[in-house]
Amino acid sequence: MFPDYQYLMRRSVSNSLKKQVLQRDNYLCQYCWASLTLETAHMDHAFPRSKGGWTILDNLRSSCPSCNLSKGDKTETEYRTELARKANIASYFSDILSSSFRK
Image 1: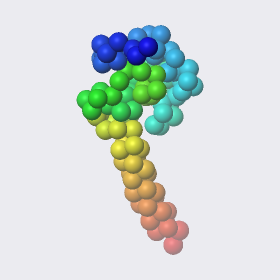
Image 2: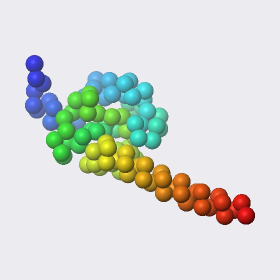
Image 3: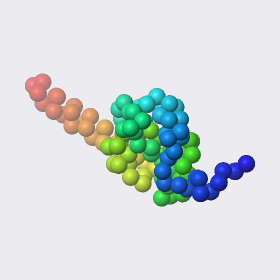
């Protein structure tokens, strides 16, 4: 049967659900791959609660505090696009700097 609406919309994630997410995600931040523990991990809503996302296993990702707080209310796709853009910019400048030192 369909889960209780209040359960889906609650703010906190139960410890049992948090453990399920961490086990599924191999105790790694799903954005930067940092190692996590039950105590250090944040539970990120891939589709944010502010946009109607539910607190269910399929919508939760294990995240380090830094990634979760910087993601804010972006969707997982929006945040991954932002991370990729930043990585490309960093790579571009790294290439420029390394080539200028080779001369």
